[in-house]
Image (cartoon, rainbow over all chains, first blue to last red; front, side, top):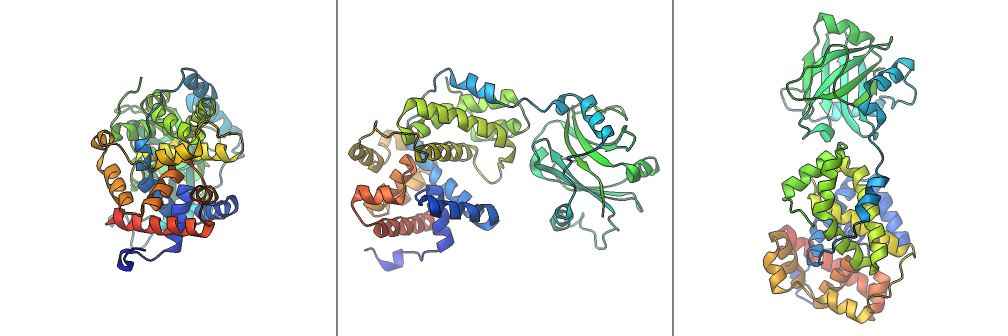
Length: 241
Length: 185
């Protein structure tokens, strides 16, 4: 035994997270720990930190060049980019027909919006009456942005996740109108929270729109007011609060 | 032929992969597939299986890349973790027959730290981990290495070292705590 002062006390959660990352647990123990990982962000963060600590062990493993057939098989298994991303027409038609199967902007969206730790300049002392919210999701279902719009004041609030961060293209926000057309709101910040005041020409349509979408446009390019030129990467139904 | 990407370049390529950029994904594959095959082969000890798992791994990477967060994980850790977990899942699914590496040899290999030549090429993180592992009881450090490199459970580790299961658990749990204390200070 070593010097007891040399022995940190065992933190059970930390030890379990390490055991899970190392994968020494029995199948039953592992299943239980995975369930905790899925349910508890703090525990999941412990596991992630352990992965980070331990991964250096892989540095000692000699690399082995894969056979040439591996990449073609990977490529064959890649799901093609969603058709809607490449074909705006299909996307808008789908909207016009009716937005079934959309991820409803749920209470979770509101909670996420409220919990968003925005910079001081953004955090309103007395928030305006938020009446319409949307969670924009990527094709994969991952959240891209939370949006809130107050038709009373024309105030638009955008809280992107980091899903669009690092993209060199410029996200543009669109309103999807009930009759099927779209209307450009404008270029938005895809990386951090922003607030906008919609002018009179947009506040009306924004109050009627039943959904919002984001297209990615080439830097410096402004698409026409009724049709995006870049791929539509995210979308979400507008819900009344 | 492996292209060398810096950590930032790899993180960027992974980020682009998450946006559906196939060329970026190809760059990720070219820069990391030899490393990841090393990892899966070490665990599965069968080239065919290891390459199957490699294929699986990259399809997972393609699907999950948009959840990669460069502010929270290093790109290579993220990739190694997926590859290693996939390989261990396959190992435990019973599809793998470990015949290629005799147990005694395996333990010896895993016990060995990096050679001086390897150590010289390693980054600070790696050197630190090796220093901290070196401060552990030799059997504990060896067991942690073996668990990581071969993906074996407490049961197998205890059997190999011929100690009760509880003893092996205690070694590793204490070892992990000391490792964490050493790495995080």
